[in-house]
Image (cartoon, rainbow, N blue to C red):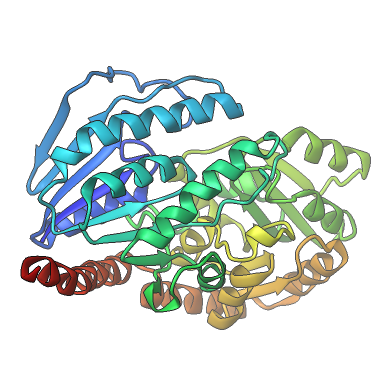
Length: 413
């Protein structure tokens, strides 16, 4: 197939879903054309050695990447984000009509940043079959309260238009299917494709001496959270739960984010000496750090828009064969429970999480290893790169087949 890919982020940015998909499809013999922007995430400025220019195209063994201009700024506010998203939409529309004109099918990885570009290209490309890959549904109001609602509503409206126009819609969590259908999408056009992780990094590893020194103080049970300390995670719940078990479990928080000072302040206020903070680490370090702890903590707040969301950390942890404690609802908890890969409890309930911490600390080490093994098996079966790319490849072929009757009617008329 000649496959077009539209994505706002692409490697060398940390965008392993569209990046690994493009590489794997090209390795399977397809001609792949990627339309994306110049790398600037997360700092908001072009990477060293990169300079935005109008025509930038690379070719490598069946994979062509065309980068288009977009407004880049270190401003992470609403206006800065929207300027970047709208400028990408304009550039993608100008270039995409010719660059993607003769593709057999178009795959779109659509977080909110790609919504306007997708809407513009769908109008320009006409009857090209489209597989839209939706990682989450944009809420009416931004979770962090940074938006007055007007821009959030515009982004949501653009995304809904593309859901309804796409030939097929792939969702990354079971409950997300219901959310997309509720927005007016034909349920027969919605498919589940669970996210995979960066498998070149996230594999089972043994803990190094340095990793154990960083994570552990003694032989007590260690539950580690690694990732963003932000509004969606609600890590104050973990601090309160840990404070109730100061003699039983250590909670190690690795990372940073907008809520970090609030979380640190609560730990100090509660005198939770068993809560420790480690600065953000490279993804390359994470498998050894995972192995140095006894469990990995996955957390999401109790928000409607997060119940159909599976954090990127979960497939990474399962791929590493590490047991999980999940303080989350919806699909995240369901996946952990179905795989029997750890323990779960309702979100934002510190007493329930404290109970899970206590139980985790008293589960024998061989049973913990078995949890991790089951999680690894579930990942390989349901979430791995070969499984996910195979599903998307089938969806692209299915979208082409679905478009043929319309094409035949056009010829006959």
